[in-house]
Length: 566
Image (cartoon, rainbow, N blue to C red; front, side, top):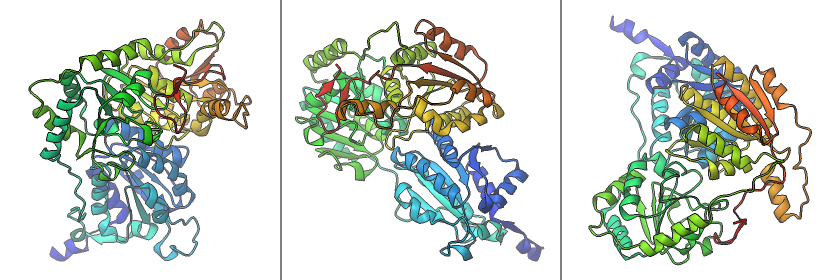
């Protein structure tokens, strides 16, 4: 009997599929090819819930959308060579926004590595700059451990994508039962748990007590830490106004009396003025990136800066930090709430000033009898969904209008490419979100430029009974590029106008998706309602003016108080 047990074996691909199931993977996205056919054969045998995308970039974005919506790692698999390189944009998108992904790439036989074998690329070398970590498997017995580690790495500490490169011979290698039973982690030196130091929290409390003009900047770190309730309690106790980053939208209810909305390049007047005039800036989980602090040398110039972040590399990287707090945002807020000042400082003059700015300078736009206003489209979708939808955007003007005008209520509600600004993100990311939550309303705002980058993924919708509502804000230009050419290049619209786009209604119909087009402002509300009433995926092509600009706007490199269009 003992000799029989020793002769029992399993292949690397069997171990891979079992390990994915052990990690609770519900769905994975991918595209087969020569270096992963043996893995796909195992998927076939095990009836894995695999979604075939139509491009490898779409597979990674779909996994990304799933991860952003759920907070769990998204999983995708691609073949070697061009399959793997096509995934790089999606991997970099996730890395910039700290999104947990596990990306499995096929690789040629070990004997062919470094010899320009057919469809060979150095994925370890290529993905090192755009991943949290990566692996190249050298022995099938390591697969359970590596999978276990990858999920742990991706979704702890500062989250991010992990690549696992599996040579073909490793996938078919057989190993005995005894060699892989314990998938223990082997990550010496990796300690993602960051407990706030009480002495630093005490300094934050002292700063609050001394402050007259306090402001909160809430980033995506609050959402990752699931700290929305703690942030709300903290802000309400001290009556501190809250500014959000783009990726932080939803961490604080946008309709709350303390909410100032998004700050930065296309942020609200009240938010940007508060950031410039405050004497204490409490940053929870934001990076001080150049879309928030366009001119770091003249940003919150009079403020004591507190930066709470889980990644020590971000603290002091862009802005001088007076009180650094290396911590998960939730743990820091819990400690701040537990040690809150018995007497709340009097911020009434500051509060009145900030809220008067909010009242006097709301986001606004001119009505039109000629053109559909994109801002109105966002507002109408927000009203019909009662601010409860999962909102996915592509990248461009429509992304900023969505950030400005949708009434976000909760974390993991806005799924958008912030750091990399990846056009083509929207369509597949919405698919990933709807796969995660088939019973929730998922809407996607996309421009006519981004729609043409990944519209092949529409093929997935009917096959998987997905109910995404796509709203194309179609101005026949690359909107944000066009706006910058208008503002900074004296209207020289070099290759940003695309009037020869295909008929999107016919294109959607070719994929079996119901679609319509609307250009009349008097009919747009009815058209949007029709999209929501339809019991299935829907594409609504909404024609808007190419001259509609996103305002307010802070020009790149300028201080936040130098806003145009307010």
